Amino acid sequence: MRAPDLEVIVEIARPPAEVRAWWLEMPPDYRASDPKEQPHRIRTLRRDEAGWECDTYWRMPLGREVVIRETFAFRPDGWDVDLRLPAGLRQRDEFVLAPTAAGTRVRVRVWIEAPSFRARLARPFMMRYARRQYPATWRAAAKLCERDAPRLG
Image (tube, rainbow, N blue to C red):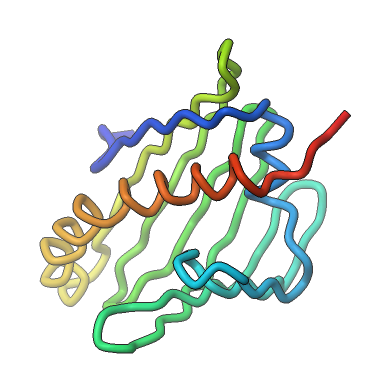
């Protein structure tokens, strides 16, 4: 596999089990109460012990909303997410959780593939967006996780 297109590390002052629970355990139709939260809605399509498939609703500039199909594969140390993006782009995210003295280090690696001509045209724009927005989105998620993750044991 080639090197990731983007890698972001966030520190969360909560243990890995609580981080995992906050990130992955949603009601069947989750709606965020915090207006800054992205995605602001998550609708479960399928879930079992191996994975989760859902539609995520994202607020975009100019009042647009985009619905993205996400398929999660659970691993003991984290999870992978396959996404189908507009313009035929495909994205794979790898989340790896590692315990630290202060809580959890989450390493997120992203690959964005362009399997078609249309996707190859769109990829440079998506890469600029990803490099600008994804780190901020995951840092914001880390802060929400610290605040809202369930307390386990």
